[in-house]
Length: 181
Image (cartoon, rainbow, N blue to C red):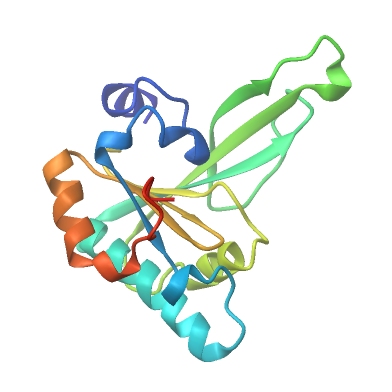
């Protein structure tokens, strides 16, 4: 998986919020709720949030497997234990500080699973509620990335043309901000 990451995304570590700047030409952001509302307040709004996440995920990954990459942030280089169905992929030193207490590590765990509509709803709902952050969902070739966050998702596609097609299909989910944020 590391070789595939380096092949497709060589200018950035696998940290979702850092991908946008070096890969702006293949990036699009979709908001989870109308009018860029950030958090769902009732079940009908959660249905919209999950519907938007799953619509894009289906377009990206239907019929294939995905890697669900989940970060664990610590101030220790030692890899912490994690979920039973995920394997440690890599650890990143995100913030280097002379004082070990202030160093920050991001330990990435990856789980491969067949993509099915709704199979990640529990995780996506936790992301929408800001209980979980930094998750990346990618195809097994690591050529397309879905980075959900509380309020929407950053999508990184294989080509600018593919990005434009997806952006145009879901134009009403885009931000009105000129930068796309």
